[in-house]
Length: 254
Image (cartoon, rainbow, N blue to C red):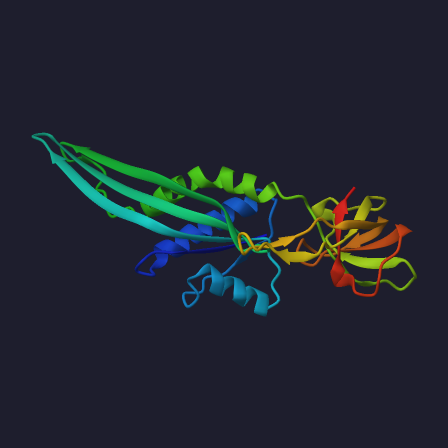
C-alpha cells in the first residue's frame, strides 16, 4: 500500500491532478492498496508519518512529491493563406518513496513530460482552437509515466507479508488479514514468524529490525470478504505454537 501527497507551490489543483494520475497508475497494476492523503498542514515526512501512526493506519510506503515545474504557452503563426495555433504544456514531477517502518527515503526520482496541441486554418477553413485544458493532464501524465515503473519495482521488491487479527473459535485456529485478491485460497500453506527485536544502530542513529524467527506453519481453511480492503482468512496451525500477543507475529507465503 501507499499514500500519495503531491502539491504545487500555489496549492492549486495541478497537484491534485498529479496525485490522481499517479494513484490511478499504481492502482491499475493490481499490486497495491492505495490510500490518498492530501493534508496541506502536514507537509513534512515526519509529520505525516506521525499522523499515520496516531491514527493507526498501517502502510508500507509513503509517496511524497511535488509538481516542481509547470508551464503553458501558445504560439500563433499567420501566413497569407493560413493560420496555425500551437498550444504546449510542460510539467516536471519529483517524488520520494519513504519506507514507513524505517522512515528512510528508499527511492527518489524526477520525471518530465510535454504535450502539444496544434490547429491549422487554411483560407478560413478549419477549426478554431480554444484553450485546451486536456494538455495539463497529458503533460503531467507523461511526466509520471517516467516514474511509475521504477516506483512499482521498488515497492514490490519487499516480500509479501500479512498479520494475525485474532484467535479463531478452535484451538490452533486464527484469523489473518488478506484473502483471494492476495492469492490466498483453501489449502495454501503459510509460515508464521515472530517479529525480530528492534534495536538502534549507534553508528547511524537508525532503528533496525532484526530478522524474525519462524515459530509455526499454518494452512488456509477459508477466505471471505467483498474486496481487498476487508478480506480475511481463517488459518489452522499445522506445526508450532503461538503466544497470546498476536502483534508479535507476521505471516509470509511458503
